[in-house]
Length: 234
Image (cartoon, rainbow, N blue to C red; front, side, top):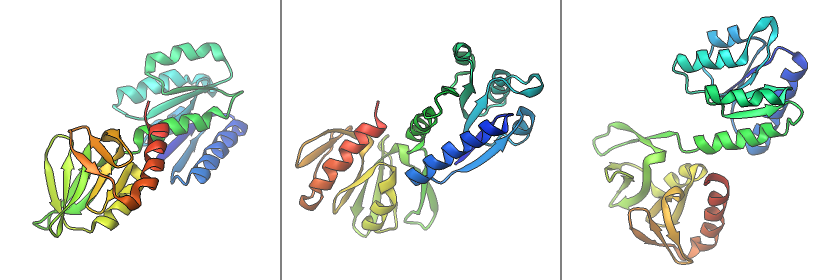
């Protein structure tokens, strides 16, 4: 994950960078922070996922124009505009701004980061070897569940397709846990995103499949499902 900062004033650059570093440390998030004092340097190295961009830069550079160039280049970068002039926020819609942050309220950087990571948490691909020994990629955002199938693991996708791969379900559950998956019982790992309903003993997924919650997992499931709903759903 790469986060960029474009700010021509050193004092503000340091404040913004410090706020991002503090957030990453507290949330245990790994991110590479790139700092620029002008838009030209950014455009020459524009491989960033999230950008904090000052609207008014030195030598007549315009943050909105920089954002337009990035959009026209096909960049998928999310942009948070920074300014001391609140009246300029209304112009952000022209370039589909992700956030507008008034420099008087730097605490809003944490909220912007929370929202950004919410959108990215399942935009990852995990890799495993299928039954033919071929390494395949599985998009976590489209993965409905993982279940044991003999000595293999069955990965069921949202569209109904499936992959059979090598692996142990307990180890897979541990690796998927940070990305919104829960080891609901010894044979199943489910994507919390696709739970349609849940009781104290059973869940129902969006495809209608009902799965019993293992007795030893019930207390932890309730906490994790509640946390997911609070943090990652609108």
